[in-house]
Each structure stands twice: as structure tokens, then as C-alpha cells.
Image 1 (tube, helix red, strand yellow):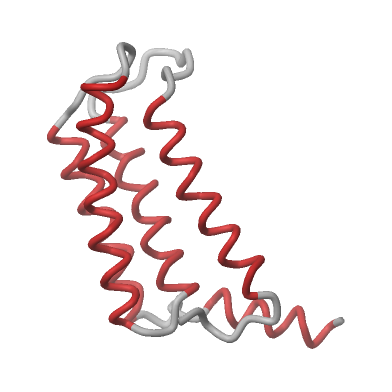
Image 2 (tube, one colour; image 1 turned 120 degrees about the vertical axis):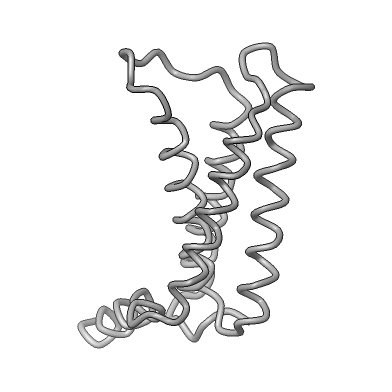
Length: 131
């Protein structure tokens, strides 16, 4: 069940758009970037999946739903690593990326016990009060 937002479809759509962006970026050729320090991509993986999991905490009311989405995100991260190896020629599977994805999800889910767990709902309600 989604939280009681003024425009729940907008919030759900924004979160689903983020999921889609992660999927597309995982399966398309990487953009040309200047040389980065070794391991930087692991931080990117962690942050991407942290945002997805924390977004689920922001959007969905029930902890059971949040947990289920977290499990799904961990599975998505692992499946995308396999897809990179089998469906692309510009990407390769990396177990360390899948671990970074999973850790990002776990830390994102921990936000459910923080004071930030309803930040988007409070923002939505504040904005609704100003309309």
C-alpha cells in the first residue's frame, strides 16, 4: 500500500522511473568518462540501489511491502549483472557490483527506522497545504 500522498501516482511514477533508469543504464554502453579511481563504480552501484530502496521506504507504508521490494531490488541487481554478461558486449558481470547493489538496498531499507522515513509524505503534505 502506497502512503497517503496527495498525488500518489506521481510519487509512484517517479520511483518507477528511477527503477527504469537504473535498468537502462545497467544495460546500455557506459558513457565516456574521464579516468576515475578504482572502485568508484561500486560507490555508484551502492548509491543507486540505496536511492531505490530509500525511495521504497518513502513511498510504501507497510514494512512488509518495503521488505518485499528490497528483496526484489536485490534480485534485480543480481539479474542485471547476469544480463550484462549475457545480453551485452559492452558490459560485464561483476560479483562486487551485485554486492554493492545489495548493500545499498539494505542501507536504504534501514531508513525505515530513521526520522527521514516519511520525508516525502511530509513534503507532499506541506506542498498540499500551500496550494
